[in-house]
Amino acid sequence: MDGDGIFIALMIFCVIFMVTSTINSHKEKKADIKERQKYFKEGDEREKRDEARLKNALSSMDKDEGDKLIYYINKHNDPSAPIARKTPQPGQSDYEIKFKNAMVIVDTLRTMNEEQKWRLEKALYNLYEWNTFLSGWHKWTFDDKFAEIKQSILNPTKEQLKQRKIQEKIDQDTENFYSAESLLEELKLYPLPEPVDKTGDNGRFMEFKNQIGKELTYKYLYLARVRSKIDDKKLIKIGITSNEDIEKRFKNDDVLELIEVIKSAKFSTKTAMALEYYLIRKYRPNDYFAEKEFDEFSRFSGYTEIIPMKHTTKVSDEIDSILKNSENIANAFQIVTQ
Image (cartoon, rainbow, N blue to C red; front, side, top):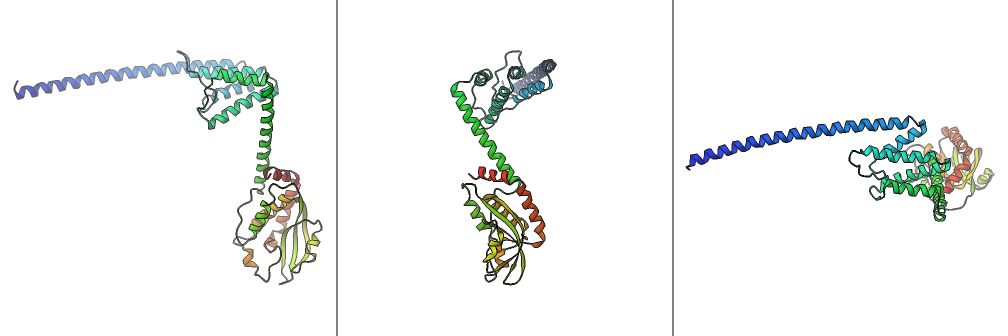
């Protein structure tokens, strides 16, 4: 065969190959479309069956049971949920497994008293929470794990009862800590913000830190109008003293003269220190530095505890507000600073 013949033969082969490839590709696409149509059709049918199954179950339940059924079905949609799914059998949807497991939970709750219900739901909740952090660690199936949980609630062993008491103590202590912490954070009393230099914050901050871990004691927080004997200026001062008689605090003061005790209140030592720290920081002017305001010759004991006179009423009201709940606040400080 000469060169022209070879060329023509190659051209014919290429054309045949391209036509054949196009036909095969077209067939594959048609097959793929049919497969997808079948998949979506089956999916629609499964969805209708699932909806009917749920509707039928809800019709025989009150609202509380129905809400719980839907809640536990949806819990399976969480990829970190610890209730392990079994591989669906032919003709069975993943939803059927979710529905079955959720129904087992609801049916079990029906047979339990209030305390047992609480324990079961707490156990399931804790499993979900733990598995948020340990996704994929579990190897057990729903049936096995649920049976274990149910047994520990309805027929606990001595060891399980012992562990239950230990866990309940831990849970209670944890709840108390977070409640106490939340109360103090809401009142802006704890944790103390970082101190600002040249304002007296550092000393107050360290005095508070030194109280951490100590037993409950009490001091008096006062708000007083005083006069400086150096320059005759009248000032509003916040302070803490161990003596109920605030006048004794100023009796032998060479620099300050007490004009009037505006407010005096008994607080736990930690409450008094935290409240003093908070009030001074809140009401002193921006960019105010006590060490610049008072030179070496005009300073006195407590010169960093001065607030503007225009805020006297507001500070007094805030002290009263804390005083109303002082016992709970004192207990909260003992819990978070043990």
